[in-house]
Image (cartoon, rainbow, N blue to C red; front, side, top):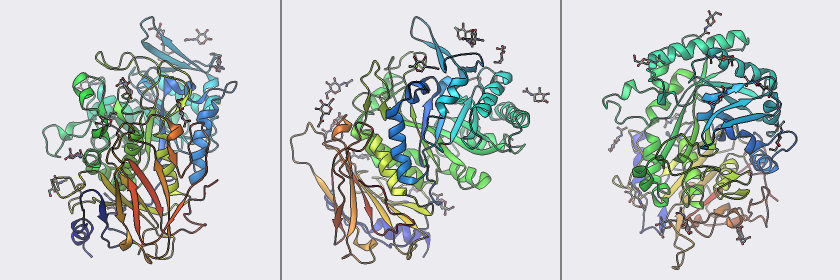
Length: 551
Ligand SMILES: *[C@@H]1O[C@H](CO)[C@@H](O)[C@H](O)[C@H]1NC(C)=O
Ligand SMILES: *[C@@H]1O[C@H](CO)[C@@H](O)[C@H](O)[C@H]1NC(C)=O
Ligand SMILES: *[C@@H]1O[C@H](CO)[C@@H](O)[C@H](O)[C@H]1NC(C)=O
Ligand SMILES: *[C@@H]1O[C@H](CO)[C@@H](O)[C@H](O)[C@H]1NC(C)=O
Ligand SMILES: *[C@@H]1O[C@H](CO)[C@@H](O)[C@H](O)[C@H]1NC(C)=O
Ligand SMILES: *[C@@H]1O[C@H](CO)[C@@H](O)[C@H](O)[C@H]1NC(C)=O
Ligand SMILES: *[C@@H]1O[C@H](CO)[C@@H](O)[C@H](O)[C@H]1NC(C)=O
Ligand SMILES: *[C@@H]1O[C@H](CO)[C@@H](O)[C@H](O)[C@H]1NC(C)=O
Ligand SMILES: *[C@@H]1O[C@H](CO)[C@@H](O)[C@H](O)[C@H]1NC(C)=O
Ligand SMILES: *[C@@H]1O[C@H](CO)[C@@H](O)[C@H](O)[C@H]1NC(C)=O
Ligand SMILES: *[C@@H]1O[C@H](CO)[C@@H](O)[C@H](O)[C@H]1NC(C)=O
Ligand SMILES: *[C@@H]1O[C@H](CO)[C@@H](O)[C@H](O)[C@H]1NC(C)=O
């Protein structure tokens, strides 16, 4: 079957009656648009260097909330989420071998953070992450001090077991400083990466290049598009001339509160809209394709991302709506062959922008507050549970592939948008997972993720709307029951994890509380309330992909 025909069948026939029902028309077999085999650490983390101790603690005061939340994810896939230690403060982080405390932030009387120094205790903190956690360490490029970058790299190598240190990055968002061009960036970056590799006898390639943040210009032939500093331009300019590059990272933040015009657009309804997030991530498709072609299937990562840059927005990025955004963003990113996505955690930085909304404390987009701070007490936010959903969708399988089946993709790879026939206006989304290792694994999906992004706020007094997804075309035997796990909360505007549940349980204290709930549904009709998402397991085998985790 040709690609074109598939696209037509998948998206041309659904019978949408308002928003209340959607028939997903097959075929049920592995779509030609399906992703690579998904990486078990798809849902990973980026922790701002200066805030690392707040999140993880140290050997005398380890942060048990962070530890428990990360262990919950590891239990579901068998592989810990990866942790990238980096961000803006990585470009002013220095090594001090004689420093007794693990990490010192130099903060002046105006609250501005000038620099961060780390000592040997810092690496002891990193070892508090769940066993097997792979770490990406971001070195300083901005000072153009090679010796400084080398000494942090060397300390990491001495301080961590070799298998824990996965990769180095040199520089964070270098497209925002020193007026780098792809040429002079690649010359400096490439020389440093090669020198560090040689000096520390690293088995090359151990570097992740770019870590850039500007959105791609669109379309491809827009003036200036090819001279942006990004994965493709730096590889073309010779960053990997000496074989040091394992992978490439770019950062994504669709919304921002760095300045008032963008603050006005950073609303909950904009965030919780599949059309908007898919059109945004689609900008990266050409880059993802190019990098994977050059460096291999798992070589393109989003090494830092969140919904709203400059530390999030109260009532937007700390709500259950952010959970729906995080779930859809991670699954859609995976469907574009992004290997891993590292959700950024940290706090506002006083000098990021003179017009920014946030000052002090921890960020309004963090998935939890590991410590009491200016913006609130120790707390888990609803969005954390989205990563539990992602982890159980993957399970322990290493052969699962994802495709966006509604609204789906056009023949040219673009998202189906509202204008092009998504009658749900970006509110109903369906993904399928196919697993080669299962019998009939290419004929039928093993799991489906069904999202209803229609906004329902707990403050609304109308009955909560719902939509019914008819998945019967995707079932070998529609009479055989499927199992359903639900990600839900009283509304998209909810900010409490104690009323946010995944498979019936809440994780407000860091560990599962409440009764585990898994529904069994026959007949292929699955009802999903407005502002809710479900994971449907169609077929699973305990040795391959069952969501093994339950209480
Ligand atoms: C993702 O990778 C798979 C396998 O390499 C490929 O068949 C598919 O076309 C890719 N998808 C996109 C959106 O590029
Ligand atoms: C390194 O730390 C030691 C111990 O705190 C301190 O005395 C020294 O001044 C620090 N060195 C630098 C360069 O900051
Ligand atoms: C460990 O953390 C505690 C609490 O923040 C702090 O008081 C102590 O100095 C830290 N120890 C080291 C070695 O950094
Ligand atoms: C950190 O910044 C302060 C203030 O600018 C400066 O005095 C200090 O030397 C800096 N520390 C390092 C290690 O560069
Ligand atoms: C470069 O870094 C090294 C090692 O941290 C430090 O000793 C040196 O003073 C730095 N040089 C400059 C010009 O800051
Ligand atoms: C890179 O080249 C540009 C254009 O010539 C120049 O403006 C910039 O200063 C250079 N950056 C560095 C770090 O050399
Ligand atoms: C890289 O190493 C070479 C040879 O050891 C040395 O000559 C050069 O100065 C180093 N480059 C940098 C940027 O330090
Ligand atoms: C957040 O929402 C609450 C009501 O839910 C309101 O009282 C508060 O003013 C809002 N804060 C901001 C910053 O919008
Ligand atoms: C794909 O085609 C649609 C029109 O059908 C167009 O809106 C979109 O921009 C195209 N995408 C690309 C990448 O060319
Ligand atoms: C979602 O965003 C798209 C594109 O901006 C828009 O056309 C659509 O109406 C939005 N959906 C809702 C429910 O607001
Ligand atoms: C839900 O609440 C958000 C703010 O928390 C608001 O922007 C949105 O318009 C509300 N939606 C509805 C349908 O009430
Ligand atoms: C959830 O936490 C909030 C804030 O601490 C509290 O007001 C509320 O009573 C709690 N709800 C439940 C169901 O525990």
